[in-house]
Every structure is written in C-alpha cells, then in structure tokens.
Image 1: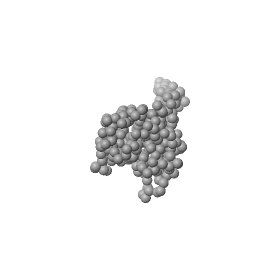
Image 2 (image 1 turned 135 degrees about the vertical axis):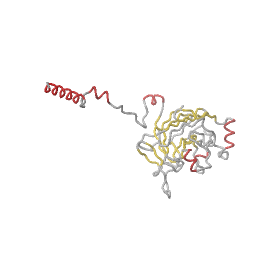
Image 3 (image 1 turned 120 degrees about the vertical axis):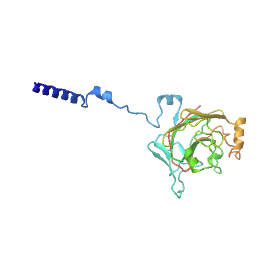
Image 4 (image 1 turned 180 degrees about the horizontal axis):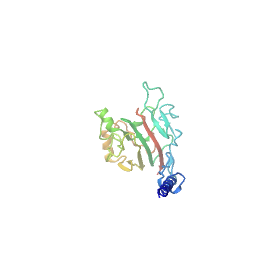
Length: 260
C-alpha cells in the first residue's frame, strides 16, 4: 500500500512539473506579457492618409536648419534614443553650439504636433509664423508655445511670471485654461493649430487656449506684452516653425505637421 501511494504521489509530481515546462503553447499564451510595438517618429496609415508629414525621422536634422543660417548646428542639437535633444551647454559655451532651429519649409494654415520631455528647471518653446531677420531674434516676431518646468523655474527665480509663462501658454500674451503637463521626465504632446488667423494651443489632448490674430483682445494683450516694440509680431500669414534653445536639455520626438 505504501509503495502504491508513493508511486501515485510521484506520478502527480511528474505531471505537475511537465505542465510547467516551456513549450506548452496553451500555458505560454496564458502567461505571455503584451509587447508594445509602437514606434516613435513613424506615421500611421491613418495619419499618412490625412496628409501628415514627419519633420524628424529619428536619425537626422535633414528638415531643419539654424535660424538665419543655411545649415543645422554641428554642436548642441543631437539625436539620442530616437529623440532630437538640445543639450545643456558647457561653460564656456563653444562657438556654434546649439541655437534656435527652424524648419526649412514655411507653413501657413497648419496642424502641428510634437512630443517633448523636459528636465528640471528647463525652459524652451515652439515658435510659429517665424520671419527671418538676422538683426532680430526669432522671438521678436514669432508667437511662442511655452515649454517650461514652471514649478522648478519659480523656485529658482522668485520673480517668475506664472500668469503667461507656463507650458501651453501663448508666451507673455495669454495663459492656458488649465495645467495639463505631466511631471518632469515624462513625455508630453503639444499641438498647435492655425487656420486663417485663428490659433489653438493643445497639451496632452486638452485645449489650452485659442485666439485670433488682430482681434481687439489680441491687440490688448499685445499692448501689455514685451512684443509691443515689434510691429510685425505675430502678423505673418506664413512662416517657419521653430524649436528654442534656452540653455536647458529638452527632448523632442514625433514631430509632424499637416497643411490645412
């Protein structure tokens, strides 16, 4: 009887061990972990059909150049892990390091989208309606979709303006309806839509603000801003898109646009 019991016990143990061995397809399917097969810097079939164009393929700056320059910078803007990265500049800053970059093409009515990730106390921005003038900075004429670690920046600079200088704001002009940015170190998605003078700022699927160039409200905001000294500010009906080097590390990917 003892021998029969021992044999039965061993048989059960062998059966259990056999069932746990790899190669049993039913078990593998039951315990398999889903794999994220999504890829950065690639258009979906639906996006391609809608007319979206990639402005960054994850490998080169072929569609970008420095502001008021014929070529892209050789230092400062680098490609890491499929992202376009503006690095922290060394001290002293080498000649030709970084600087603002703009698209080679101009856009009138457009829908623009980009993922970005900031570092602590980082400051940057997305510019549109860019008019090139070597005697002026990019921001003198072009509106800015602000990108910033506003909480960290406020700790570093007690006089920091929290009204119109937070991520998603129309910089120094209009504040976002809410704060929709994810924590530092996580990816966010910014979107800017322009259609016949009407502009929208979006962040992570939430509308931050909308305005109309030349409207009474816009003129009032302009008169109170730092741009009142520049009569061409925001008035271009077509211009380059730009990414700002503000001296902080910021990453960009999935940069795409479609003409409206």
